[in-house]
Length: 62
Image: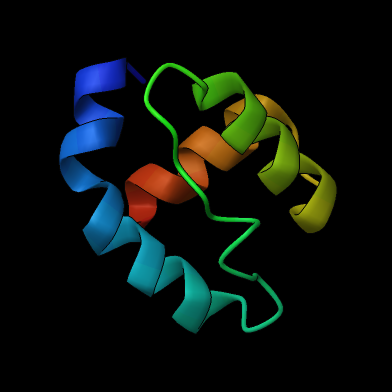
């Protein structure tokens, strides 16, 4: 997943992610430009998934 794809779709994905996993917080889903790895790391810990699984899950939300 490239940075542009993530940045362009993040607001849409963020809402869908909260619907899919009600335990995700705004802090878990905080996106900062240039810090995608930190976002993926938080989601990996919270969801118990690998990085690739998190990326696949996010793409499935779109």
